[in-house]
Image (cartoon, rainbow, N blue to C red; front, side, top):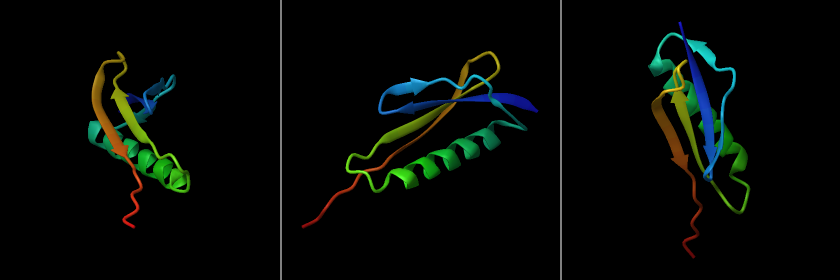
Length: 78
């Protein structure tokens, strides 16, 4: 098991993960990050200003390994 840290970046503002999570491999960490972002976006759908959210996954040495991101926008067609 490896410790992965999930730093949240929301609209350019970064919040570092101080504790991390033990996971078997990077693939699991990427899926965890994607699930967290999907839940965050679902909670924000009703807001007028929607967001760009990313999670930077880092290893125990705080080296970046991957980035998972999603931008959610609303567009009216009429």
